[in-house]
Length: 487
Image 1 (cartoon, rainbow, N blue to C red):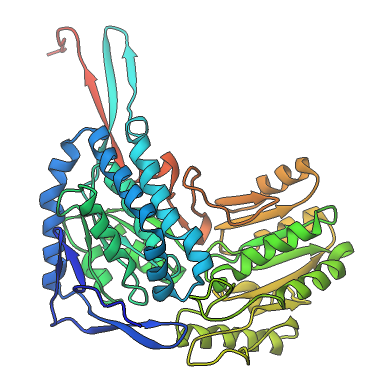
Image 2 (image 1 turned 90 degrees about the vertical axis):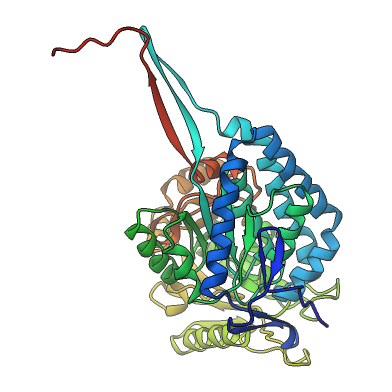
């Protein structure tokens, strides 16, 4: 099983290689097999990519929004035509089941290109401001060269979520995917060129933790958009702030999902499972602290256990498989260490808690795990695990659960399940998070803003709000009379 690209990097409209860069081995998480070998970007590659972006950006920005939008919409069409091919590549890259990638990954990226291709003109409109005889107007202008740094859980989606609004606003982008998932972004770059994007505007370079600082600190870079962990976000934001660069930080979370006793229990369980087990739990917005009102706790746990134990774990390319492996051996070790901490600190393993016995090979599989009797001070209730580990906590009343849900440094997401919509709105108004759901979880269509608060980041991805983060306001005052001065 191989997925070797033509070269490691895509710069100025073509594949580029520099074997002086350190070797990056791309592994298929289901088997541990090396499916591609690439090279990390050298300083020369970084310079080449940024120079191409800087050269191409002014002409692109001068094009009409309609012309730019036409390219993005064509890219969306191509992605949809090749959805199965792209989904298979995403499965090889991440280990996520093909039944998931075929509906959630390239399709989400295509949605992003289509949306931003269609709303450029409206999203970049300014204002006319009457001032008596004089007047002023504002306009949104591009920032210039933007850097996108991706995570490994949704590599194609993230490449598009950052690239689409950046390009729509008239910028150029240099995108660095995670070294764990280097393949998908290269195909996105290919498709953009095929769709008519001028060369140099969307460049992909590979790299590791040494590559990011070369991009973030480069004097020709105007903005950095990162999807990653909170510690990484702090480092990148600090470096960018030192040069007063624009930043968007989409970081981690330890999000609460609250189930009141009047909720539809089966829907709440479905939401909790999607919010903990989808993508093998490797989703930043997951509702990993599930607060269940005490009256329905036993019923919730009983049904949850039965449904969790029916999850089909297996080969990701098998369309029957519902859960694949974690991204890497190291990530599995990290998740297993958290499971051990949960057991040691007194939480009850309702189901799971180890490595499946019936999965062969060297893949990085782990059982979907549910802990009951979890308390707020336990490590598994405070730290982001980034694996299929659900923590179920009890609560008695509304005020109590709101206070406990907010008692975290994170603020990415939150969810509420209740039949009382007045209570649903009342509770989400008090929860400290950037993206919230009532009676559902983890739905992120491109039409709505996505992002966090507190230590989970700042800025927004998707929707018209994203265009604001890839552009800046220019204000023009127009004097219509003679200038009078006191001297």
